[in-house]
Image 1 (tube, rainbow, N blue to C red):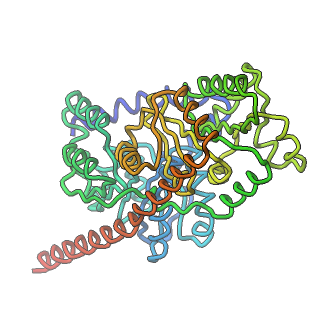
Image 2 (image 1 turned 120 degrees about the vertical axis):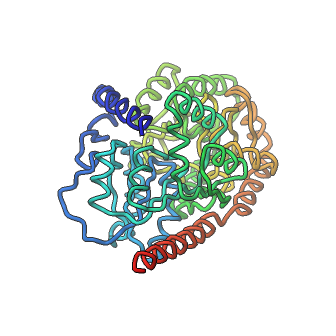
Image 3 (image 1 turned 180 degrees about the horizontal axis):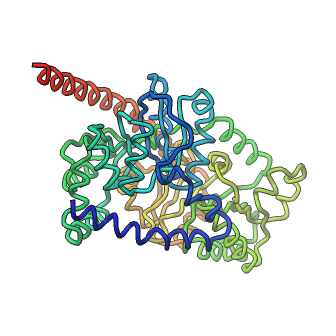
Amino acid sequence: MLPRLIYTLLLLLAAPIVWLWLLSRGRGGAAAWQPWAAERFGRFPQPWDGRQPVWVHAVSVGEVRAAKSLIQALALKGETVILTHLTPTGRAEGQRILTDEIRRGQVWQQWAPYDFQGSMRRFWQHFNPRLVILIEREVWPNLVHVAREQSAPIVLASARLSEKSLKQARWIDRLFGGLLHDTYQGITVALAQSDADAQRLFDAGVAQVQVCGNLKFDMQLPHVAVQAGQHWRQRLARPVVAIASTREGEDKPMVNQIKAYLEASHGAKPLFLLIPRHPQRFNEAARLLDGASCRYARWSVLRDDPASDEHLKAIDVVLGDTMGEMPFFYGAADIAVVGGSFERHGGQNFIEACAIGTPVIVGPHTYNFADAVASANQAGAIVQVQSPEQAFEQVKQWLVSPEAAQHVGSQGKSWVINHLGATERMMQAIVELEGGVSETSASAHEQRQQ
């Protein structure tokens, strides 16, 4: 009780600092985040219709995409899903990829309530969810506490916990008297991505853990978008290298490598796609390209320009400054260098590119995808390098020997196919869990009657 109280007080003290930081940001700042929206405090102007929904929390873009197949399976089963997000990009992506389910009233989107006890209790009083599904690693002390108060089972789906995160959790527990261990103990079942994740989750405090696989393998990329990218590449008649999902500290070395490659090249030059992960960094990436004197154009301009094919002949880089178009870019790419892994960010989802058959290069920092990277390396489905310089050396080799790149792409596609089925296994585990909960509730009711 006391550790959670201290945590809540610290959260309250930190909140104004976070809100001021959001106000200081430009694009994607407070207006997009809506930090003072009533929903974030568990307040809703319209009454709920009384149905007990399933609450799925998918914090941002990656988690939303991963959760799509699970949410659609729940909707197919006849469930109503309350889908919550923390970030505006996550909310926009949910609206984009679950349009039909939202239109039919099977999915309702809301901002996630802040992890204050009052916000969580008001959220619960309003929606009264009968089951909570948290995607990947979104474990919050007051959320778990209030769910346990209401006797609602909590599922951590496609659950992952890196060695680094486990060490951080243990440090926090020493500081706050076992706060996170108690919180993990409140999880009813964790459906882990791998054996290693399962062991770490058990060590963190989850009593019941099953290995069901990674939902990201079940992601169905929109065929139309992938095919449009492939047709666009055919019209270009030049190789395309996507530098995708770059994060803080990665754009500058990548731009430097692009510049060095273009200056050293005397033959046909590939078209580079530079695609920052977050929209607030699009302008920063543009400034870096300007500073490097790279001939570039923004995709937001090219996309709607009837004469874009002609313009593309005169440039070397396309800055991907839109959201939700990664399937198009991966469809267009001959090679994908996936960012988030060249600085200590833990990596970004490279499985999408593999699923299409695009050969993938990742950097050294992939602890968020450690098991997937190890498995893909063993299958020859990706190439892992230690620096942007090595990544571009591999790009050069593949551009000279495209058959080697195509082999890796083919291996990647087969590797993804071999790991399908996480959604089905998780749905089975959820059905079994609900059956067990129902039997327990019925037994308790009978005992009270006696």
